[in-house]
Image 1: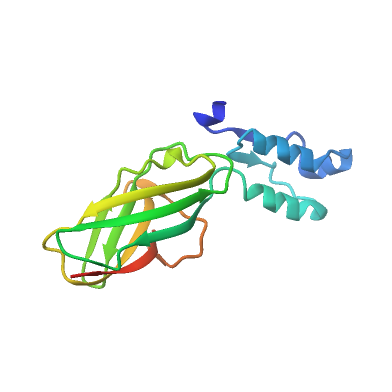
Image 2: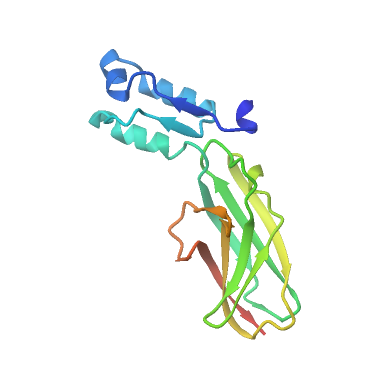
Length: 183
């Protein structure tokens, strides 16, 4: 259970081409390493056998954490000084959590104004599987009226950014979830 507290890194004995030459069972190796909740894998910077490429690509996509945004729900209109709520469902399709506490931020942004809200979401709890976060922030009374993009980001400022495994629209390190009208 050490993976619950810190990274599990695996460095290949020999290299993948030699594994193939020796007749090693790649499927069994992959299953074992995923069950160990591996965060990193060092393949010795040598070529991957062509016949194994697809399996290795699928394996690498499961190593560590990969946060997918499954669903997001928020108000389409909210008044200044009121609370904005966001329900977001995240699926960690990887086999390990993130181990560093990084900020999970919301941002309301349009061409003239941007306001960032630091949330209390602890992304280290997203081990593997599906998670729902219910976030509420109070809008400033002096926020301008108008349409804003509701955006989310993990990390930022002095911390590394973590990308979501999605092709959602991005604005710098932020992912755009919805348009919200402030009235």
